[in-house]
Amino acid sequence: MAIVEERIKKNLEDLALFTSTPGNGTTRLPFTPEARGAVEYLRKELRDAGMTVREDAAGNIIGRYPGSRPDAPVLMIASHFDSVKNGGNFDGIAGVIAGIELVRHFREEGIVLQHPIEIVGTNDEEGLRFGTGYFGTRAMAGEIGIPYLRSMKDMDGISIHDAMLAYGLDPQGISTAERDLAGEIAAFIEIHIEQGPVLYNTGVEIGLVEGIVGLKRFRVTVQGQADHAGTTPMDMRIDAMDCAAKVIAKISDWAVDAGGNAVATVGSLEVFPNAINIVAEKVIFSVDIRSIDETAIISICERIKKELAVTCRAKGASFSVEETLNVLPVRLDERILSQFEKSSRELGYSSLRMISGAGHDTLPMATKLPSALLFVPSRKGRSHCQEEWTDYGDLVKAIEVLSAMLKTNDY
Image 1 (tube, helix red, strand yellow):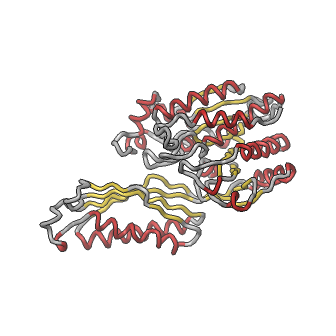
Image 2 (cartoon, rainbow, N blue to C red; image 1 turned 90 degrees about the vertical axis):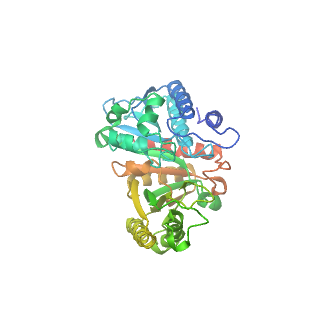
Image 3 (tube, rainbow, N blue to C red; image 1 turned 90 degrees about the horizontal axis):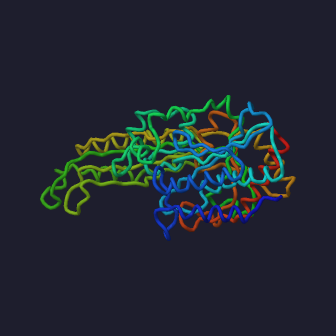
């Protein structure tokens, strides 16, 4: 039996209903009722596809399809089930459904590889709620501990620790999510929408990702002094907003200067007390820096910190910088990449080698074990918005490429 496009379509349309913003895009943040609903839906689909299913201590949902050698390391096919606010219906979750459809196809065709296959829906890849990222994969890598769970909080002051408790997970057991990556997993593979315009504009069907940019995120707090907006002279103010704005205004230029296709974004800003007639006492803003060149990331960070020091000193303010995520740029596995390239060619699909400007779960995993990432086109390059769209037929093509590669290159 062939890979069934209609099943993929139904799954993704069903999962789009698990959102806290119905009619206004997909909002499925980690450790929320919407995330729980999506996980339970995936649990049923994984079981129906013939897999044994478990949820680990980090909230990753994992389905296992047996191989002919039960003791062999698994082939992990994964992507995430969380979303951004008011996002689309394909980012992350399309890769999970693609993995499930692959196993359905194998089961219907009676295909059993030597290695077991694990289909994983990872938790909190986006990092939107807590300002972090790659929570599920980092937990598998043993990088998440109790102090981290207690220290990272959302805008309502809820820690990951407390959010996990409310969600039905035991944060004290987070260490049990750790995997022996080198021993247990033969390869990590992800199918993902491109989230950019290259494939769509060129008409190329499959993106073969050679490398993924590094990513550093941090939260800056500028501390000033609240005063009356009308009676406090300009030269007597310790205005946190004035200090923050002077630095923020320069960050995009520093990204351009750094080269290496670097990008830098200030996407979140909090002002206290946030009143029209009060000089700002405190400002908290986020910084997200990405580049395939690690030195470019370091350069931008250093310039931000230096400018904060100069600006705050001049105004009598103070500042602090809290790093929330730091992942190095990676090059993906050339052997797997070449196998995908060969399978694409044999199936008659056009392909293009490219660099990913977005992180994806493949990024932290690629530092630990052989990893690969396949892109499918995003209509007009749109993503992280309601207009995000990928043709279901393009997902079928990626699954066919993955299927062909696995059947001819059993690990």
